[in-house]
Length: 310
Image 1 (cartoon, rainbow, N blue to C red):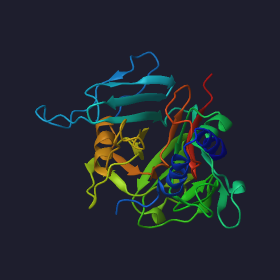
Image 2: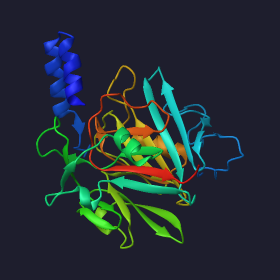
Image 3: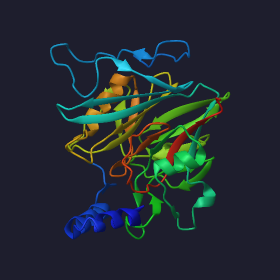
Image 4: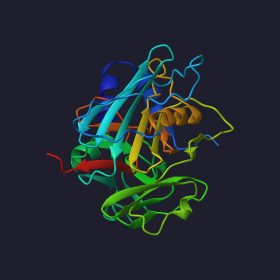
């Protein structure tokens, strides 16, 4: 991918832009952090849900719509998006019904993909989506680059468990989302201390910090606008809510802060939520949707969802 990008830029006869692009790729990943539930889905119902009004009518929040229009991808997976030229801001959201027995979470890498030092070849969310026939794929944990961002080698920073195997150890100060199967249903938990993951966890992905806890937006000492990826769950632990906020092209979308991301999550019906890796690592791919820029960097671990629905 990077070779193709370099060829296109160099042929444009703009060497200064070429080298600026390389510098951006080298240093733009934001791996360092800033220190009423969804309605049950029924295939026969209209996919129009009204967002919960958490703000007085005299001071509406402009980061999310007054009415939520959800598009059905398959039974149990829905998609919506928001765009404001005034802010400007663009974000995309997916809801996943974990009580739907046809939906299965999948993740990369597996134990077999990682070497003895925890290093593996990163993928883009689009590559993962196509290889696994997933309907949704998003970036997850922060990561290290043993060589540089110009090379696809990645090493996860923080907790990662896949298929019940611990692939990357926990970092206690960071949060994680854990999934375990109980009575045929996937049960999600968001923990503020990665080291406290439940012993029955089959899949866990570490992020940075909890931004929404028991319905309360968490405070952070610093404020910055950037691309964001966040994962939330509803109070009944039935729905997983995925939020991807664009922020690399500030003319199209400024991005959001941690607190603003939490407000969007809360308005969508999340009760708890955490921030995953952000900046140029943020990414979301949805089948039949043109969301991501064609030229995106490989990330580390990826969460996706497949279905047996035909």
